[in-house]
Length: 265
Image 1 (tube, rainbow, N blue to C red):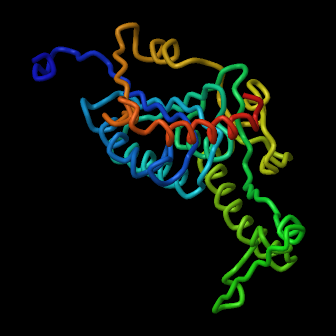
Image 2: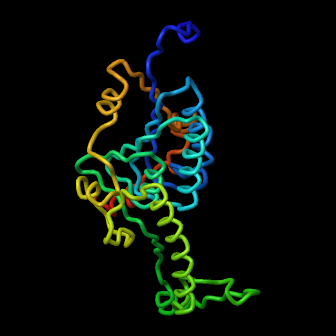
Image 3: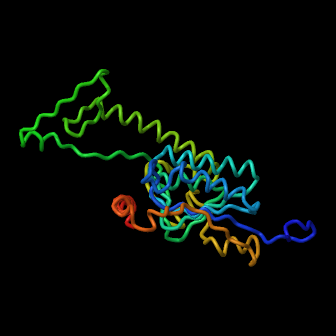
């Protein structure tokens, strides 16, 4: 009732979007645009929030999903004229940092890891193992570049060159994203796009983050002690709650642990 009385001031509200996990498309993806789209839409539209806070804890993942999620956040921020602040917990690296750049500012913990502005592709080579066991790999294609980087065949320099060209395109898009949203805050005279990572204050000094701080005290300082936090995030299905997807969840957990382990977490 209070919101309909114009001369009464409503309690400030902050919509909190938790973005935690590996960024990947498909059903097993912890973070992807298909899953997050309705959640992000609600966060910006429901109850006319005074601000949206992104709570990020992600080692990265799909560059396309990172781009889609970040673009959706920026589009809604502009449409609804709502400020967005990104808060980094343990890590916002690679695609996780891409998500952080969707904030008008990035606030981190003294021990938060940010950066890793680069592109990585990893695989294995099994051709010698197959040869030792007398197994012959047979691949037939229409189109000379249809088969690339086959792990069961010897590595081809032409394939590696082609992969690096593709990675460069994605890397350039990542760099553009960071420069567009961090702008003059980025340190000059330093190459910040080597894939390196920064921790806490060092990230602030190089312009990859803005200040040290945490969600609740920062938002209370801005909107007062009575500010209301409204949490948004992916919810587990009934099947997941009752253990019907134990194997899939376990596999996803292993993959996520491997990704976080790259940063010593």
